[in-house]
Image (cartoon, rainbow, N blue to C red):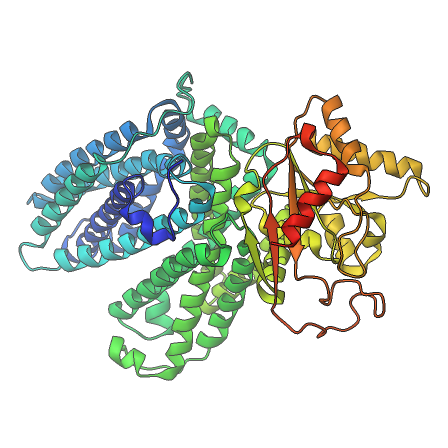
Length: 637
């Protein structure tokens, strides 16, 4: 992997990212320039008896999304089988051909030829996007490190929404030019396609991940196979459902903007465009914030945070818009002159910002946790689910409108539904909730700094060993690791009212002294051995109890027993020494005189604490004394 860079914007100077970014940006812009210009033409400029204006937007949207249902499974296989840069250039070549056909359609003077040709191109541009989707998300994990993946996804998400916005604005402006508008649209589409193909020439090679794959051309059986493949990793599969729900949620708002602007806000077409601008800027901002808030890791603790914000501001949008006074149709300046509308725009901006915080970590998690040889097919399956959920959102919105729901009531319904769905997902996949708690603890309760976290392995079995300073040591270690950790912990901690429930949710392994409960003692070590056999991270506090005076206590022999069991199972698990610093004396630590958790402001809020991570020790190097010395040295750094 190439050298990492200070932030996500620095990636735009790197050949491994910049040409790819601008290639996908041009494609998204072209999709939307073409679709929006065509929609405006059919709605306002052409008279087609078999395609009334009221149906034009629906027909164009349906034709564009249909290829996602038909060909996503095939496109995922092609992406896994072939070198990804070749796939990208093939897709961009296809885009040029489609746009040349579209240019003929736009410039034709025969409406009976023009509209069918452009409808066909709509379907073909949907196919273009279907082929590009798996490549887009499968390329990033090959080009970026784990620490760059969240920022890279944030940049792509931001770029996509900015491109959508610019494409629609430019398409609307060009097609409205009297007499020559369609010709300008034709030129714009072809030029964008040519620019995208030219930039794609500079994308570095990304080798095929499964070149021996035999293509299954049956989309139904392959879609089912891909969903089963994704379901083998339950966290990945439920993350796919979470992303699809976000598209369901967003599609409800995007589809209702024109009616919301006209019927509720009493605004004209420019006000509807303003809503789209605010929504797009919110998504882009939230996407870019992910890297800052995650400290450059794949931080799925942001997902519950995003879900909470989505519900809060969707519900507040209902209250902000339900009782606006009736008025004549307003332009943007008149609309903005009324303070009541500022709250509407703020709610819209914030709910979309939190949607960005919600979606980017999920995409990064799917890329990171999916098996490399199947990654594109899993992403293709995700695209199919996204399309199905967007179709269901349209059906639901239509049904609610038919049932006499107002648009603000639909927003309220979706906001409440989002809270219920999010709670359900987080209970099914507690890792999200646990990471959220860890994120809160490491950002809002403490100022937590991790030093040399590159020593925490991104894959394979390993044993993390750390000094035991407080009741939240495990929570802080969770925050430091991009991977789930299974903890071996004193059984008495599980009796704490809140923390005990949290650690049970984390599937921590309770251990009791052999003298108290020999069966539980042996069961704990067998459970620890299974964690290592499964290739996961195991954490142990070798002192056997929380320090009462802040000093490092002698290490017990449990670590040697764990290593012995790993050797018995044929597992080589390196040992990673760690040291929590400046944590003793805080609210969650145990002090001889006071006990723990009895004086909330003993150290004040936002106390600065740290975690120093040492280089891995191979099992043959580990003895309790040498490990104790390594942790002691890290404590003094």
